[in-house]
Length: 245
Image 1: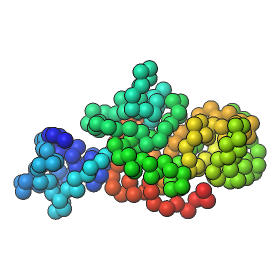
Image 2 (image 1 turned 90 degrees about the vertical axis):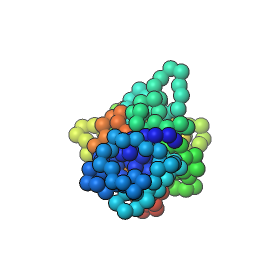
Image 3 (image 1 turned 180 degrees about the vertical axis):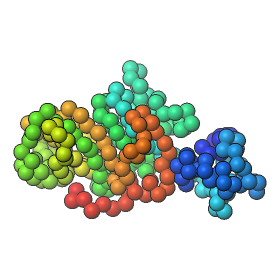
Image 4 (image 1 turned 120 degrees about the horizontal axis):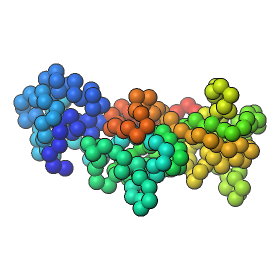
């Protein structure tokens, strides 16, 4: 991987967030090759240097996992000839080779986008039979029959082309006069949430993904901001949920 800032190396291992890592370093709890290092900006090679954090050898992670609060107008892709991609807008300190979005959000959809270079992990969270849920908040142009919609979502919405979707959960949210709903699904077909509401006669005007599995979008991340996930956060994505879907 070559030489990188010490705080970046530790944060990318999933041990702690970048700010938490800087505090550990300032407190003298990090040693490199047996020597305490208190300057987080010094560069080391994680493949060659021996890094110990709070008495424990640093786990040299093979892959990285990034939470991005995706803004509108950015496409969920690695490369695109016309638009900025979720990989393009990552800060340089988070960028790696072979990064890609694990699943897609529409260009006009915002929220939790998971970016990684771990293909097996991405497959595991995207495969419908693994039951990793994705949670969205949708604002609509008109109100729907909630009880009818909830039953339709639970039974599995049938799209106009005959596609039968897996069971999903629907909850009404308070948002003034704007019809707003929380939707929990476990698959990610093209424009799925929008098509589900269209089947009920309503159009989605705003859509935000707020959760993958049991891991919620960090409320401190502004749109366009990103950070590495910790090991504890990563485990929340795949842990079993109690949701009906």
